[in-house]
Image 1 (cartoon, rainbow, N blue to C red):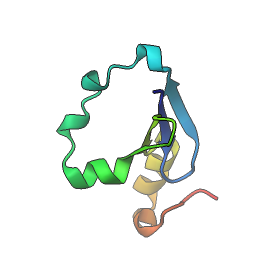
Image 2: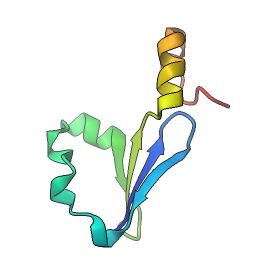
Image 3: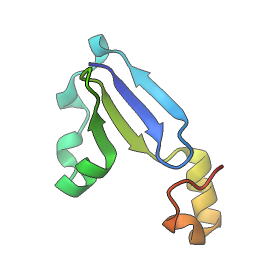
Image 4: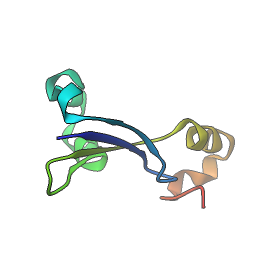
Length: 76
């Protein structure tokens, strides 16, 4: 199982942790409520975990343009 972090708005891969270096218990996923977990974390058929987060560029765009919060993809 590898762990992939991807921006939920622009789709950029922000990082990947290979299965040898990941201990799921150390990632803090238990701090998420069930809705947050369902929105942010998925598992593919190979057992890889995909976490969607917001990258710095999209966070900056959202801060500067609050009207973008309702959009799924803010950077085209």
